[in-house]
Length: 210
Image (tube, rainbow, N blue to C red; front, side, top):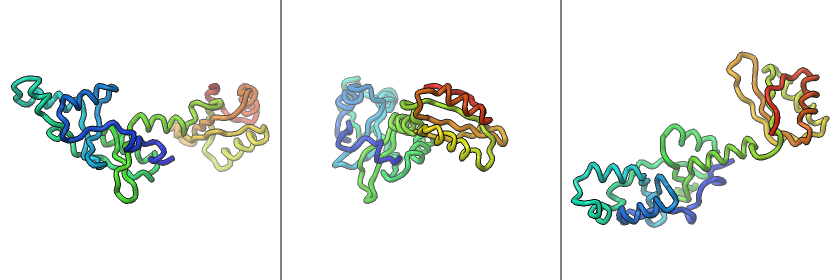
C-alpha cells in the first residue's frame, strides 16, 4: 500500500492562502473542526497553519483589539514553514513512521517531479492500517506458536485442506523468546470448528471471533 492510495489530493483540499487574514482563516478552520490547514499558493504548499498558533500569536503580540488582530494579521505572518515531505510512491509504513516521529499534523506529498500533489493525515494512516489488518472483514484468529521453520507452513496447509481462505496474516513479536503471535483474518462461517481442528493439531489458540 502506497501513500498515493490514501492521500487527500490537491484538488480536494481545504487550504489557506498566505494573503488571507486571520478572520477568514479561522472561518475555514472552524467550518469542519480542523486543527490545522495547509497554506498553498499557486498549487505549491508553503507550510502549515495550526489553530493554536493563531491564539498564541494573539496573546503574545500587542494588538489594539481582537478585531484589529483578526483583520490585519495575515496567514503569512503566522504559518509554520517547517514542512515534512514524502513521495507519493513511498509505502504507507514509511509515512506512518514519519508522522509518529516528527509530530506534524500531516505530510506534504510530492510526485517524482517534485510537484505538490496532496497531503497525508493521521486519519488516513489509521484507515490504511485498518485495511491492512482487515478489521472489517472475516473472522479473527490469534495463534501462539514456536518460532521454528515449518510451523507457519503447517498452519497454512491445514487451512488450505479445510478450503478456508486467508484474508490477512500478520506476525507479531510476543517478547517471549522462541514464541511468535500469528494474527489472521479468515473467511469461515464456523470459527469454533476451525479452532477445535487447530487445537487437535497442537496449535495454541489465543483469541478468536469477529
